[in-house]
Image 1 (cartoon, rainbow, N blue to C red):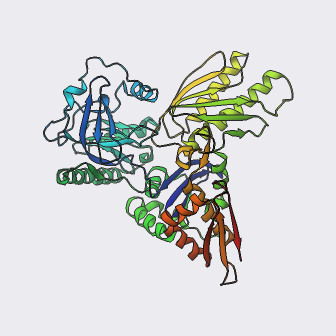
Image 2 (image 1 turned 90 degrees about the horizontal axis):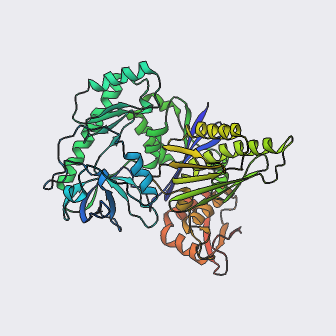
Image 3 (image 1 turned 90 degrees about the vertical axis):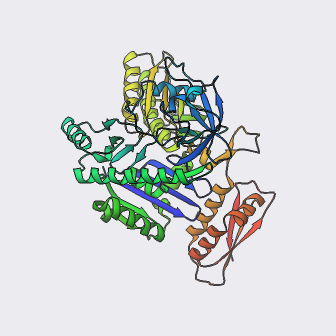
Length: 514
């Protein structure tokens, strides 16, 4: 099916959308002031070892200490050097890994049997090399691990393991065997897993990938030895390049970016690492903003609403807590055509597709409960559960569907790495004492900039645009977004003046051009 990658790049915010048949499938939003830390490798100092929690708090140079669980600590840690060690042989997927992830989402640690204790592996004041596995979420600090993994285009290199594997999404047994033989013949200290994108890759491509990642690992080790305090040793790629590395494939028809500097940077990256896709890159120059052209902004606005209407007239309600997401399915205005059971089944099946879609776009994670409308027939319950599992296969995040109860409740988990879309774009509402959400000042500022851009240039060179907005939003733009404001003035060819209105609701603004 035809796919496109859209990149809306501005000085303080970058948004990447993955589209299939004109439908938004994946969305990444990253702001200059709060970039993701996932994949970055810092030098850390163990601040506290907590035997009762079998965990440790580690200073990695952030405001809050990072959390290191015992299951993420290597068994051969050297108390003196901290991390410069030989790789050890072990499975790339610990049999208890899923249990640990589920336990973390509910705030509990699973019991450990015949495994080293945290106090035997780490000591307070010890320096260690770690990798950020999850961004800080809510009141929790970042989740870190000592098992480093460096993703390339075709291969994930794991310098601290000796495991060799092939992605389970590559299903052809002959291709799996071919890839396994290639990586078994690559002599390098460390483990390797061939990614889904590596399907069909030549031996030369795989070797080049591993060679690059091995050199990167050596550079990380040198930087670790030079650094004398807690802080970053290696940073992950920018969101645009990371998206290309993970999403660009033969299925993608084209990559569109609306920024010239970004186009040059992406072109260099593709030419160096994915030259066969270079002709897919295009610089968007349409009169309408890129995300407006593809109605991505409309879909984003829809995906931060609590209620989502279905085409049939039913609807779902999505409530998101810190470690739990609840989705409630309702028939709404849909009354059906035949009998009650068919009406319920059709609504539930439509809700399955929309719920799976919303989980991807919103990047919801943790434990998820879907409250389907009660179904009397066992065959209908099985049909809905099967449809849900089929939809979740398309999800790039790891999901596990547990069961459906007699009440129509489905329990599932979805791996959570970064904050959800709601937490990225919104903040607790000061108007209702935290019971709802309003958009962040940054979000409103970017909406103002996009509305100004939509107005385009005017023929009168002396024209001035006045934006009436809440005082907090105006102050934020003048203090934090001056570069973006200057950029939009250059784009529309006229001056922009902000008139502060303290009586306005924070999300309200009006634009006048005179």
